[in-house]
Image (cartoon, rainbow, N blue to C red; front, side, top):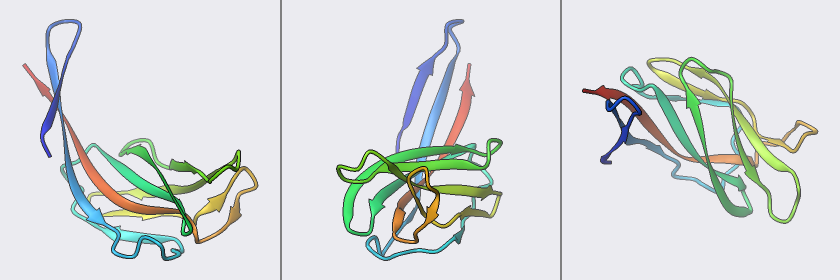
Length: 128
């Protein structure tokens, strides 16, 4: 992926770069908690694209910063007013760990809820 440059108020700029690191090859399959073994050593954050439920193709993106874990990924489920979610419980140099999926505020664990589809590594670099 390319870089996005953001100009600061003082004239400096930051570059944000994103790389696709993982794609789910079974996007309609339920998933319990799981760990992705990835080289995350050069990334400041990850963006996760997730599917609401195994039978609902609605998607949303969530972001997790290395120093702000746990992080929540949430996707609205159909016409329901609740969102399904999944937490990122660990973000290390070598792995990203996801909790079980859950439905709405009830927190009921459901492995078919909030299925991660893609993971992007994000680098934020200061540019003079």
